[in-house]
Length: 245
Image (cartoon, rainbow, N blue to C red; front, side):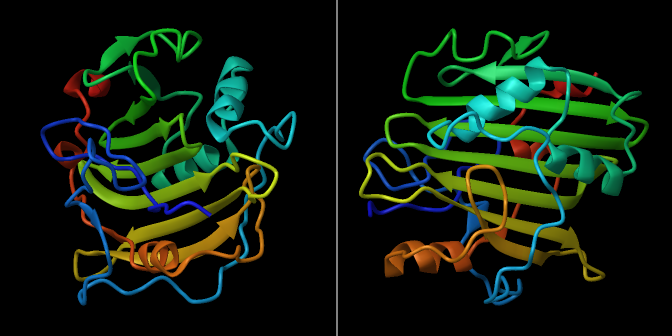
């Protein structure tokens, strides 16, 4: 199995995509890092999920981002987004939503994601959606490294631009029949000390159903179990402020 790091994220202020795995072109983000003494490690045993996706993959090989675009195209929402919106206190039917996509190193505001990947310039690609209602904001961000089959989704609930809830879901899609596709879901919530603390970890399949722990190399396992969430505010997300209007 190829060496693989668990999450793509953003560098504050730069808005650059960060790959799931080390490369000569991409460096790890300082904001999503290995376990820090002040942040609890994820639980050793995955916790069962409480959500089921609205639409299963059409095939075992369908990547998570294509599934997301299919759901968006049907004017529906992923179960994870619906759940996070409920926890965030946002009514998706009433909230104002804005979209952006990034074919390279710059975000482009778009009316929807119906033409996502049409402007693809490199193997790195990203999209973002932000629902704004009162002081609350729900953010969904996708990123991918298309040549390796690595994908991520980040969800954030913000109150007055402060992150209250966060979720990182990362997938490694098998490149050949000798490999197994798998995913990892990690959720955080704001603790009494003002830090984002782990509330759930679990392995999942491409359809976001709970799955047994896959056979992973030591480095990948260490990076998964060592994830921390260091982003705290809207500014840390590296997204254009126009998404809030």
